Length: 356
Image 1 (cartoon, rainbow, N blue to C red):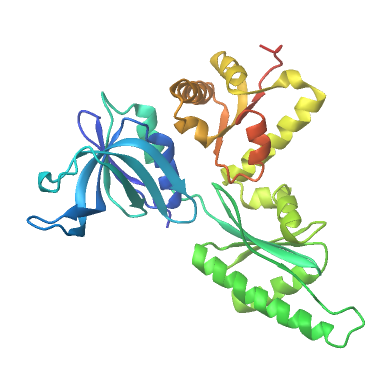
Image 2: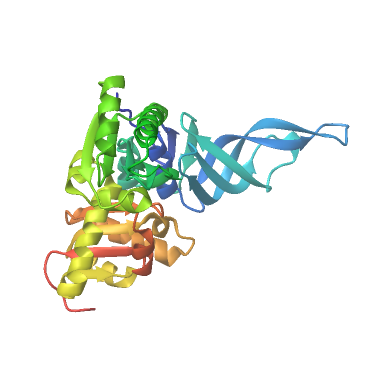
């Protein structure tokens, strides 16, 4: 069953009650919350005990004025840093700096004045888990196992293989043990991450042996097989661009965004009039409805620089209104370094434009 974040808006639309149900919801909150918003939540703090010099660590209900928000992938939590504006008077904590951790399943109340806009409310309501997959790229020299999520790709295991040579009597037994161990490990990762999609990739037959073993151990796993040139991290990076994987994981924005970035790189070398990059150029193109596909780094949307953040938000609004495909990615996006080098944002145009 797929759950959406629980969202309740008050009559004045200045207060929202939220219960994040998945990591994707925490990431959405990171994008939505701004400096100057207010959050009611529970924190743990060392407070002075009456008539005593000692301090005691207590859970306290507080209202924070948000200063910064930090999302920690795969931790199941969001860190909000701010200043306490309301709290129990007896503890003398008003005006103190405080971190609050929001977990999946935590209830929080967020306030924004004069009100929350409809677009932001809809973004919160449409948030929710988009699925995950485990991928392994393996050859006879090395393997790597990664977790693929809508937010990015996380390498969770890497190992060089010291298999005996082809003429060795022990090689067959070593391969059998390796396949057994990897099949068990992959099923454990699948169980831990609550996914049912497994991608097996590599240049040789090891991936097929693992598939046979997995199918004997479980008939509930969807397996995608693909041939790539290498095992290890290089193989993972290669498989992320394969159509078979993109088709199997088409709902994953991080992989769709990679397709758009690949298309962008093709245009920029062949016909640059069909692409824009940097915040200023993309902003100008978005304002006239010229953006067809957009990839933007999430940190632009919660930038401390108000002018930068406002432009990024206006780009999103204009692009969505004109029907563009929009992909917001994190720094765990496979090609984030390339995107950062282009200003953190790129657009593919509906029609050619001269440079602004």
